[in-house]
Image 1 (cartoon, rainbow, N blue to C red):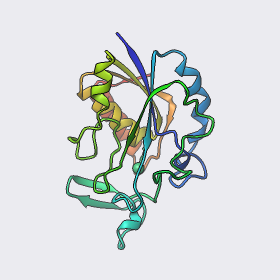
Image 2 (cartoon, rainbow, N blue to C red; image 1 turned 30 degrees about the horizontal axis):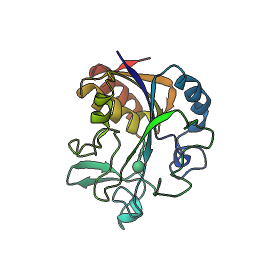
Image 3 (spheres, rainbow, N blue to C red; image 1 turned 90 degrees about the vertical axis):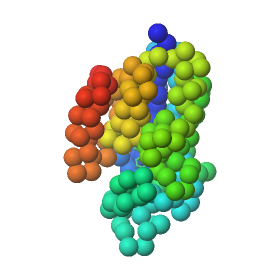
Image 4 (cartoon, helix red, strand yellow; image 1 turned 30 degrees about the vertical axis):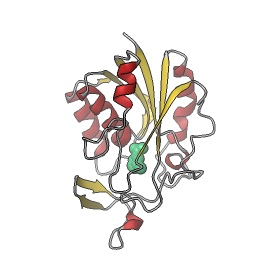
Length: 198
Ligand code: VGL
Ligand code: ZN
């Protein structure tokens, strides 16, 4: 078995003072850096939206941040503007050790579709290419850490399980947004899908 660590979206905008701050988002950085030493492969993801992305509430004049809307691919939460390509908010947290990363998977570039998962856009069918890269490297087991537990981390772990990887969520090295019970719902969904919660 070959095991990779997937570090989801440890970016300034998801840390305290960021545009879409996840409570305690920065607390997990030292632990993630330490955990990297236990893995042969480290992969980072980076939420990477064009300005005016359709997942931003500011692109919908009648909506506010955290409202829901219906997209052609299904219901979508509308977010504050965040992780705009090339901005300081989209950069990795300055203390994250990016040197060990073999691959940085960017996502959310299509202006019309959000992308929580590292593997598929939110239509759940358009691939990012990461699954092919991992399979090429002979990687069978994936451990997930990062932000946010109930959105990008959960969607990534659920897709990993669906794709046949052995997926583990390292819960203490994740932090959640927790909108209307979304954390408990995501944990239940992951358990039911066979994601190991460590
Ligand atoms: C995320 C909302 C919007 C995440 C990204 O990284 O969990 N959440 N974009
Ligand atoms: Zn985003």
